[in-house]
Image (spheres, rainbow, N blue to C red):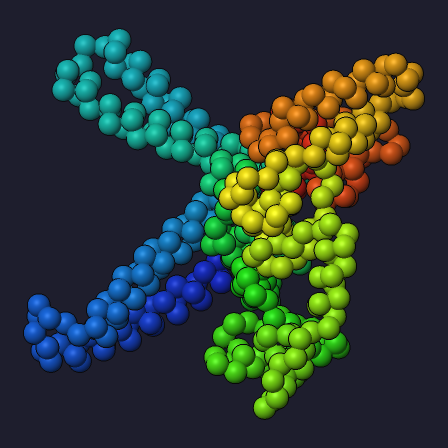
Length: 418
């Protein structure tokens, strides 16, 4: 049995279980609706009845979606395993019909009979076109491997992924907040597109990570041997008492230390000391999540890992202040860094100065670049390779460079972080 056949069998079994569970839920709702009929005016149903009705509609829509997915996987498996045979049979049918049509046109048969095969011709051609599209191979945008278009997953931006690469995107996002929400070319990728390829543990871990990263005031277990995120639903309103479901430790939601019971929450000395250090070093604090941010280049437009945008000088939301937008001395440092990065050999002093001035002027014109449009692919990094200027990882095959500014990013950051 081929790898795809094995995967398709597992996925089909999972889909069958979900469809069966939905069918049971719909049957239970039907029983409830039948029992409650006649107990209220037709034009004035109670709120609970309306809620059941809306839930029933959603379940039916999801059931239809799962059945379509099952059909698509079945077709994809058939095309993958029997594509050449199907294509050959289809070609034989088309050739046979064309021969038959030619014979009709060259004879003096009844005109009514001559018009009859047109519907058959249309159906054969449509079937051939459909099979041809399913059997056509496409390339995964991430790994560049070829696969049948029936097996590829098309995401909202139009890119096509193999199931393994798309699953990897979601698995990586579990541990990296900057990859949330999972997206490609700034468009979020819906979880249902890949959920059937995730295990139950991976799916639960992703949903919990999504909740963690989207929570502004995050609270973690104060037990240093645990440190798990405590969801908002486990924080007691009023007392701000946060209970950890992993080790049963109780944390104060105000200072993030051990819960104080009946005592007043004191100021957190470690947090106060950290903020004083940040103030002395000129660092800025994200107004949304409280993370410390350090300026690397000349533009004061900061984007935090929680996606909040703010001014580095005053900390307010971006374009909500009158501060200047860039530090031109830092732009000179950035220009020197780029020239040294791109130089294959050591440059003469005069040539290096000329290039630095040219790059500095480019940075000043595009210091608020949003990196729209296509990136240029740069190859030939030699033994040192390329370093992604967003995640810091090194790559040896190629790097992507914005066509408007000199930033260089890996494929993952290009699709997920900007």
